[in-house]
Image 1 (cartoon, rainbow, N blue to C red):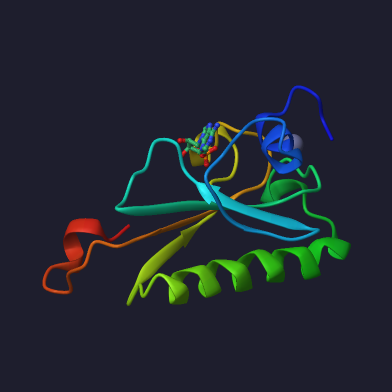
Image 2: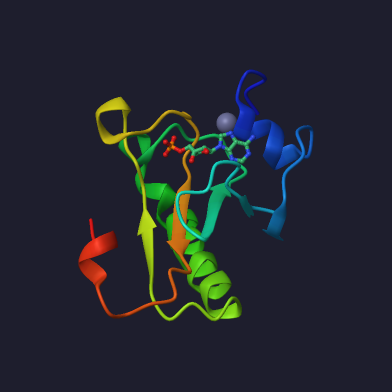
Length: 117
Ligand code: AMP
Ligand code: ZN
């Protein structure tokens, strides 16, 4: 727990969030400034700064983040979605606590170019 980390505080319930899922290791909550109709962040409760700081023993945690994102997507009936890790400032990361973006809910298949990365 890093006392100046907003996502550590969300993980511990010290800062409120719209929770989508929680267990002992992971929390998922709605992004406060959504970039898609469905925009959920999935975080480990352990403070890891980013993908760039991953250690080999984090592989199980990463797998759980991805598995949880796909479960939430399925529960929400998303037919397609994006899973994004921004890494470092040049990668668009502004919060230095690892988080997986689940983005979806555009509800259309006709023109994927409009929202393809
Ligand atoms: P990133 O640019 O990958 O670091 O993404 C950080 C994300 O966290 C952004 O999409 C923000 O909108 C989101 N965010 C920042 N503060 C909060 C908060 N208190 N609750 C929920 N989402 C947040
Ligand atoms: Zn943190």
